[in-house]
Image (cartoon, rainbow, N blue to C red; front, side):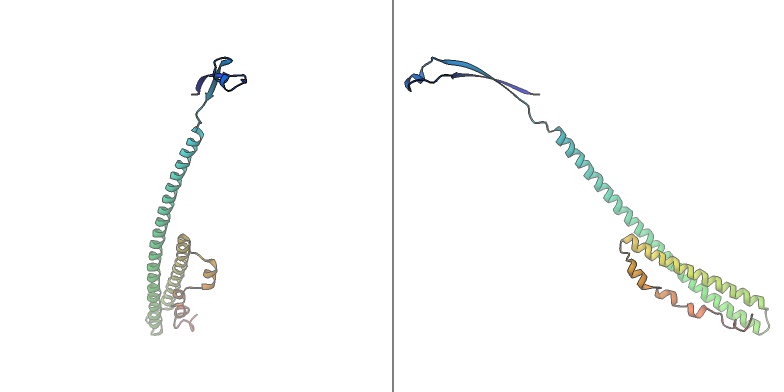
Length: 185
């Protein structure tokens, strides 16, 4: 609301001839002054301040949500990687078991205790076990890359230079061809 001030002043509008005549009451007039003043309106600034504080609060909540989501994604990726490591161990054991089945089937065939179908079935089981192992290795490699991407430490140049992991070449040389299967076909 505007503030209205009315001022009344007694002023002399003429010059006097001497210093002593300046103190008389002649040639004085009343003058009125009106002053209208308005207090500054800070409404726009206060609205901007409130909006900025709301935006800051929203950004803090978004940051906390993002931190929780990253932590959840990291935990999920770590659990998945642990499951895949166990799956790889099981696939490795499965390959070893299938390898022994091929050896047993081959020995039984050589001694005439079974037919060629048992050997072929055992070799087929070995190939399936090797396939599952390779799938587990690939899934584990993807899980490791996903973990690095989730943590924000994925470096494509290092991934390309690294090549296969040491776990991939551990037993593949032994399982490429079943023993005793070179002469039969």
